[in-house]
Image (cartoon, rainbow, N blue to C red; front, side):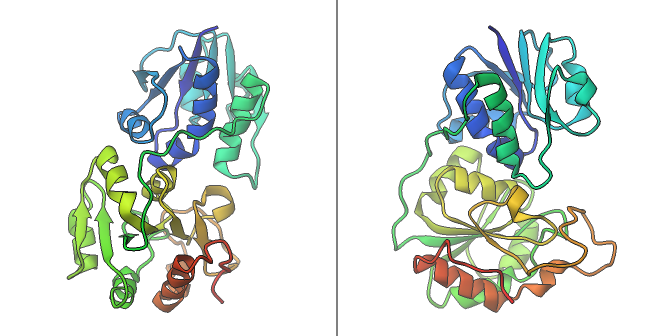
Length: 295
């Protein structure tokens, strides 16, 4: 049986789909995976099994399509494949032969895993082997402050770094194209920018904690074994969280997942640098799973 997987496009979503894709490839090693260029780097950086990679827009020739990208367009492009599995969202249920109901309060990785389970007949729980070595107590704290969306970008990373640097080695990280913006935030603190994913995985091998907004980089850090503290604004940790979640508590208009706030006030402003610094110190002291939302 020929299997083709349409991976999600965004880094964070692709990371959350890794257990589902790994389980399918374990059962069907000749599976092809279609996705954006970053997909190959992601699979290599997470020690994913060897698979046949294809461009996202390349026509798939298969008996079964596993359409993890949650878009109508992806389902439409693969409508020629006899059997098509995916979550019934974004008005695409009629394009799928095996539509699965989308879970309203379900974490995205669990939704992807359900699609794989529908194909395999058993839970898809295996994670790819982490591509990193274990961090030591002498390692550094990594800060990932940038996001193009103001509703996701926590504004107090500089104050957090100033606080934590009195006791720890603190380093800022920036993705491709983010160096200038992050350098402005980091000020005198060390900055590592523009690393390809395999190099980033290696660099995070000495990270004691990765503090980040809800971002693809945070999901990648968790996938390669780094402990993560994720600060949430407009997003819901129950649906898109990684590691330990830190929020400003319930708010009447959230989670909204909007790119900008229609009220003009960011819910992230409710989370102070003092609260995050306290959460970081608790996490480093071993209280990683006992953190409560700041009040």
